[in-house]
Image (cartoon, rainbow, N blue to C red):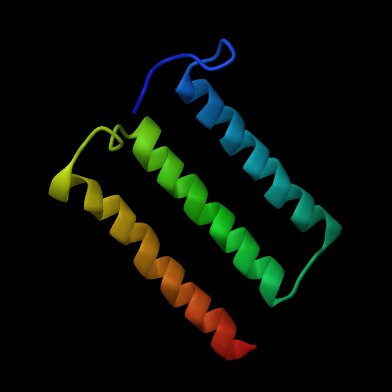
Length: 91
């Protein structure tokens, strides 16, 4: 990961802004009362992206290589795929 500023802001600041924006998107979806399989999977995808960003940038796993980077990825993939499967089967 590069620590070079982009438009005057460090990468961690951009990630924080992205996390806040994605949080507001999910809040907006909830406030509008949107539902259905597509919306549920979209919100789940946002949650997985946010989890990956937190793991990579704020837990410091982005600079690691090999086995040490896998626990958070596996923690996101397994429950995410099980929840996706449950949503699709219940539809």
